[in-house]
Image (cartoon, rainbow, N blue to C red):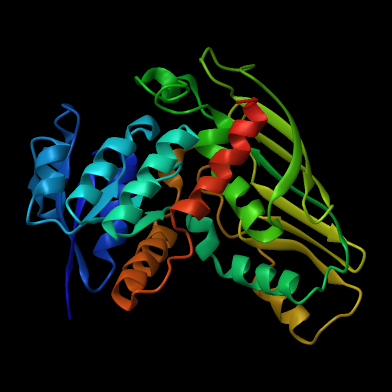
Length: 335
């Protein structure tokens, strides 16, 4: 069996997530880390039995690395991603792919020309609950969908924004929507399809930051359903993320990875089993502490990326797919 050697660009909290996730994949290992001068790459390298590279150029161009995982601040995803493409190496990149569509498109084009894979990280798509909900939608069980919306009422304390990049336009690309809520925005788009119209409002109401800590939007989907988005890091002490989809034949309300409501006009025998299986709250990580987010769905996300490369088949969250959430968020920002 071929072993894939991952080089992780970045050495913060998310880099550690990636290392743990990669460590759980049978035919993958972490070959090395690099940082921007913090010295944390050396600590992570010792923790995972890997190498600390001097900088991202040395890591990306190394013969010891054949897949690059990008876990840097969001506005510094382009440079290592494009360099990797020029070296013929695949890239799995944290959300958001980048902070502008122009930078994302440069990344996509570099890998298109190189014939290499560019994949995004959206772990919520690898929950069992997502697959079951997607199947119900594909089967038309909701009838005509009239509404779909998400809420991410999270909390981050002042310490969270004391580093050099969180909440900045240049490196975070925004605030509560682009950093925290993007996972659920991607989730909503993956279920509901494109948005034809959007009206949004954003402000920093609870933190002294450049970008927003609170954002709301009203949506009209191409399938004519209406919808809403609410995302914040200024809702103490933080509550569970939520999704609601309603139609003429059914309603589902999801909290975290659980279904609070799973009701359809035409019930099926498996509905009660689904309610039992997903009845209690599963999840909750990230509500007030980003370090509390479980990494297991990162493992599934990265394993699916490796599987796509090995089978030479399209990856579900390729560059074009991962671009969609950023596009919508920038539309909410009015950019």
